[in-house]
Amino acid sequence: MVRVSYAPYKEIVLHEIIEQESQVLFEDMVKEGLEGRLHYASVMFTRVPFQSQVPVRIGNQNYSARLRKADNNPHLAAVAKFLTKFKGESPSD
Image (tube, rainbow, N blue to C red; front, side, top):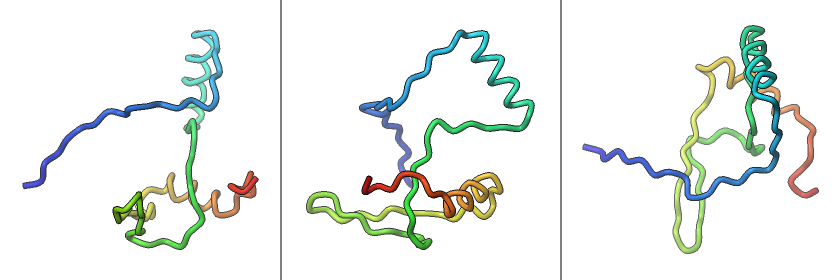
């Protein structure tokens, strides 16, 4: 049987901090939810063709990052489609 464990993050890096009055924040969250909007604080992605596994080398160790398609989740599929056309900052900037 496989062992399941939990390991909390060792570090959290905040790149942007926006403080709002609590009433404004909660009102905005509820209003956005009622209008069917979901907000993501960040999205990380890379432009590669889909592969079920991607080889990764860290130090002298070889690992495999497992990927899965988002076809069965229409929300994630829509985000993926949007990102394929996204022309934001490139990693080389």
